[in-house]
Image (tube, rainbow, N blue to C red; front, side, top):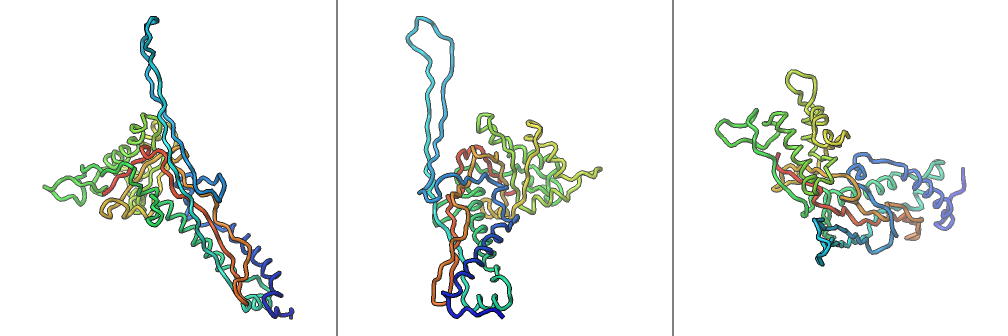
Length: 321
């Protein structure tokens, strides 16, 4: 049997080595259900301890016209500048263990249980994910799916099928609409940012409530084996215009993100010119620290700024469908 660690000092080298192994294993873990990078560009550049980031926007205004060589009035271009300051804040979630746990691991010849470390990282990643999506009221941040600066509208009330009641106004719900009407809703959402950006940026990503996405995958077009999702992926305005595939994702947070707790869908161009999630310090474990007579703590830290909508006009929300 290996010699027992009589006190915290004697166990320190073993503890330090064990926490290093745990941190390495946990950093390799992936949580695909909270993959924020799939939804928005994550910016990790810059000093992790900076107060924040300043974004400058630059636009030019000018129109050429016919000119008389003897005239003193020259058509001129002008520059319009904008600036936004986005603060960074520190977040934390760590774990701890004690001398009893260390000696039990020594007797069994196994590593210190890494379950606490796994849950610490998972909890931090979930926190970051929800700040990215929903923002944070405490630090007054908007999110990807609820930013007040983005144009919000409603789906067209044109549906008359299925659950629509005869003699009542047409429905906005997709289950009462034809495939062409559902496609029209989505194309209107996709094209709106394109028109708002002077036909520069067309939405290449659509986020739907998970139940809405799921309904597209199981609804089959009459007389075919093609699902409504297949039809939309082929016939949508973005793919027809660019020849590139449209990204459509279903996320549960959109089930109640709309006005009055209704469903919301969002279309936007997923690139760093439109929106970024600032994360100058991704979650990382710090060196083990003895925080009691026979206790150790492993702090976990991260610094984030949240979702920065640089061009909010290049996104559109639609509710109540």
